Length: 267
Ligand code: SF4
Image (cartoon, rainbow, N blue to C red; front, side, top):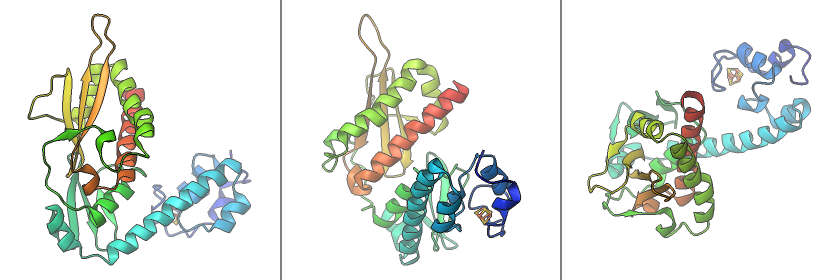
């Protein structure tokens, strides 16, 4: 439970526009979630920092700080998109632009961004997804894929990230695959996983596309005859030219975390 005495005490602090930016259908529903401790005040982008400081508990303030940073970063990215010629960016990326929207495929599903930086998609819009997508639209060089697969550590700009990537991403994918290889394969296929063209000799070798020019090749071998299982992730050699390395890290680690949640709820 929160520090509030009742739902109306939270409700009074809100804009009451029912804009849904907090992912709740109404301001009242959001107020109820905050009162029950299921949401943070900072998830409403219209609540100022002073109000959060005055009403949040310690955890809420930490979460609020992270959320505020995130919202600020998103506002900056939206401003950049407003100042960008999306039609010409669509040409560079080889994507569609119509009715003021640039549309690209994320994990096999359409995601559109309009000239105000607003996103529309059937995908769940996670915090790990939005900044990489926006940065991809803003800054990807749009280089054609080479078909040469390299591990994360061999991408030129990966030096400061490689160790974290191994722990936060590769190990997590491997843990999910080890617990149920067939379920792991099903999740990849659920997100439009496709067999790799130059067949990689692994029990599972599938490509998914978190972004059109950022395919990820996942190779997994089951354990056998005293040999431990192994899992390797590969990127196209152009990856860090088509997306900044920190966004590759965020996107791939976010994907691993989403797989883990799916494995916990459905595996
Ligand atoms: S984001 Fe804020 S103003 Fe919008 S619906 Fe949620 S609580 Fe209401």
